[in-house]
Image 1: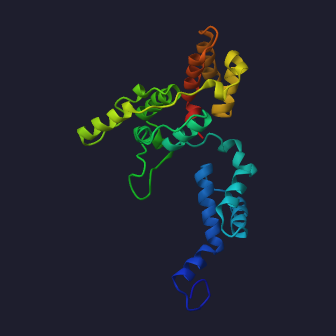
Image 2 (image 1 turned 90 degrees about the vertical axis):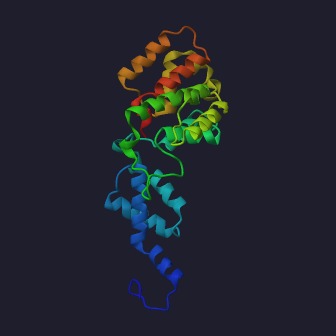
Length: 253
């Protein structure tokens, strides 16, 4: 007997009964919302999402579409309330800069240096996440790795990997240094006007990298940097990108 029904159930039947139970839909919907939004959904929202999940045969795509298209998902108090994990930071950066993922060994070194050793979580629960991603060392590493990603400069990654075995550490770091990384192409992500006009450039970088305005102090620092340049060239634009990537807001999602 399971959930009030008695029959000659086998293992598959038990799993089907659990998967199709209304409480399962609520549980899955709440867990997904908490993962993406950073807090548990209201009772009403949870029930609405669970209803979408059940009516669509327990398919995740309709549920995720309903989540991401809901007004609640874009509530002001949910914006920038989670720290990006190293993987989110790396993949999100590459996508926003319309660049390419570095070679696998570089991706592994980058995320490991930021506290997320891919495919080797600290325990079965996984990583704690949240503010644990941000330490004094990790934050500095994010800034240095931003240089590597934007400039395609592997020298910024020198010594990023430390392993228990000194020989393994040396070999991995030597391989990192031999790797090639693509340099961000400003012409690919910014129009000619955005690259030439400093105020327009700031607005374009805010939109592309933050989807919000810089705080006054940070905007002024960026303005001062650009004002110290003459006519902007690609290196100046890449420097501006690095400055935005070094703001607290860029570490949040």
